[in-house]
Length: 249
Image (cartoon, rainbow, N blue to C red; front, side):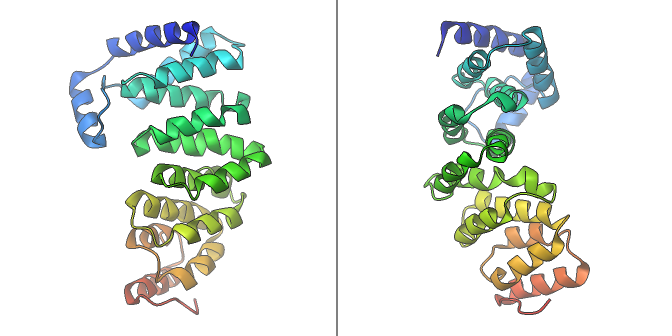
């Protein structure tokens, strides 16, 4: 961590604290059940602060904003960590495979979906979309003991899948391996991605889920079937309730 990054982060955090709301801070700490400190700042306000910092430093070299993000993440303040995520999101196109260790470190030490999901979908996801060489990293993440890392392997595939493109085969492989898991955030992520895919490719999701619906959790199934045609949705829900695969839709 560079001295410049630490100094930049300290100045940025002081500015964040000045616009914090103690009442909001207490509420968010309770909601997220986090051990981090909270200043009580909305995401739009953090996003504006990050945008202003970056615009004032137009043309900033990659290593400078990465150092800034690393230093912000080292803080115990939630808003500093969220600002680090937003900074990497904003500059995601400049990131390379050399930055994967930092992203993975951040994912492992996030401890909350509120930090993990942006990192996974928008930062790791941007790398996965641009660089085929990210595939082995996602494969490793998908079998990691840390459930936040496993969740991230799936969410890193979300953006192109949401558009009707993307690597559904890879996601389906990950999801099939995790379908029997008890962890809520894994179950929710599978359902979330399936729901987004189903908005554009309902037949694909229905055909994938039908022979597996008896293995899936209620959270996964209820999310996945939301965009599906009523008759298909009802058949899949009935299969889930009966704990039987659905052979015909």
